[in-house]
Amino acid sequence: MFHISETAIDTAALARELAQARAGACVTFEGWVRDHNESRSVVRLEYQSYASLAQVEGQRILAEACSKFAILGARCVHRVGTLEVGELAVWVGVSAAHRGAAFDACRYIIDEVKKRVPIWKNEHYAGGESGWLHP
Amino acid sequence: MSYRVLYFAALRDRANTDAESMDSQATDARGLYAELRARHGFTMGEDRLRVAINGEFVGWEHALRDGDEIVFIPPVSGG
Image (cartoon, rainbow over the protein chains, first blue to last red):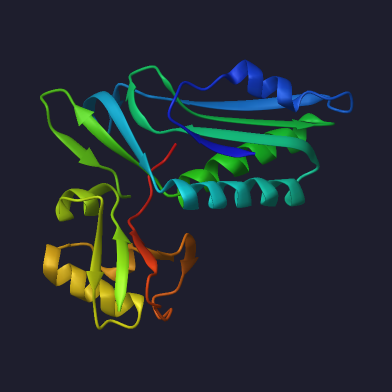
């Protein structure tokens, strides 16, 4: 399940949802707000999303991961709104019988989310300037 | 025909609104974006954008229907 969240992500609850007797591996990825980007000092990020399409596209990515890799479960939650340095911006978790598929699927999900899901970050810099990232 | 256009990120800042309802003679997404570019002075070209209509990605030639919700999607930067 994919979700856009306006509040802090409960990672412990998400990890519990992935637990099952057949699972021998759980791989998680946490994307954190970093204090710099391309040599500029970043003080906070503001994430915006086109929530309805982000939900559909995020769910599609998780379904792709389930068909490409031998995994048992996958979850991803992405924050929107204003986030301070150090806060959790995105969480991905995958469970599988074996670690190889779990690592591969987790990597696939975060890479595709970053490429495809309509979410944008506005970097606020020390000094008061800000700018949307449209790579 | 009457359309609802939503704006995000740099396009939202440039248009100075998150959404607008408009009447237009445009019959596809390409024509509508050309009209909005002239109106708001968007600098981003079609090659940088994707199009979504009523919450699904579509091509630039997708025919518009009265009442459609249209979003021009700038390069994304989640994560």
